Structure formats: structure tokens, C-alpha cells
Length: 220
Image (cartoon, rainbow, N blue to C red; front, side):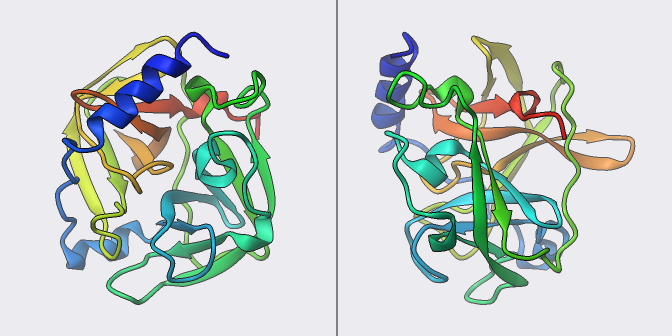
């Protein structure tokens, strides 16, 4: 087991009751973020979900535990649905999964190592939604943005822009708080061409959140 795992899981559990939701993203702004959607593990409208980001026409970036659980045994790809642009009961697109890639070190010790809590869901067909770009530089600087759905507010996106962050122990530590459901959601940085995904939300921290840099993805 990773020496970080007990500490990080205890932080996750202890923070669940006190963490705050991301601020509501105004409904009129949702159209700009339709590439961010719900990763539903058992159907189109289930509340048991994470967040994911379309980073290629047929590829969703999310957290490993969203697809495989804490112990690495999760649903089949066909039992997972990516619902893009979900807003108050309507979706911009909805596609089931075809294949799953999980970082090979995520469960190497038999249970989740949060430092490698990153995964890709390949979809049955290309989505009709334009994907967001990925910025895989090893070092990025704030401000960061976090966008996602939470289990307490599952039908509208929440978003925080202007988050601070530092890197340590292979993780990006952000000062913006998240809640269950935000896992797998994108951490973004703004460049010359607009916002790009630089990390994936993995867990809640005592005063913020923990994210896995996209530099851990395979070369694409």
C-alpha cells in the first residue's frame, strides 16, 4: 500500500461533512462547458456519479476510482454513461463506454494510490460535443479553475475560478474545496488559447482539494 493512502483517505473522510459546494455556474454559462459532463455508473439519470471531461471526440478524462472504485473492481465500460452538458434534466449528448484505461500504478498495491487516480473512458462513438484541450506540462502556475457536478447539486455545474495551488508528492494541492461527485472533474489553467485541462480532481482535503496532473497520462 502507498504510504500516502491511509493519510489521504482519512483526509477525504474527515472533510466530507465540512466541504463546501463549488459556486453555481450560471445556467447561461453552461453552453461554454458542455465538454464537462457526468460519468454515470449505472444509467442515464443515476445520482451515483462522478464528473468527467471530453478531451477527444471519443475520450473522457476522469478519476480512476470513478471507473474502478477504491479496490479496482468496478462496472464494465458498457455500464458507464458519459452525459455531456447535463443541465436540469437535459443533456447535450449521452454516450456509453466502450473501453477503460486506468493508470497501471493506480491499484498496483491492491488498493487505490491517489497519486495515480486518473483514467480514460473510450466512448462507443464520437460525441457531438467539442472536446477541451489538455495541457500536459509538468509545471503550471495558478490561477486554476475547477468545474464539476456534486452529489448534493447533481443537475447543474459548479465552478470556481481563481484557485491557488501548489505541487507536492506527485499531486496538485488546491485551495478550492470540492464535494463528492466533483471527483474526476477537470482542473484548468488559462493559456493564450483559452482554458485547458491540467489535472483531475481526486479527493477532498482539509482546506482544499487534491488533483492528479494530466502529465501522468500516456503519450497521446
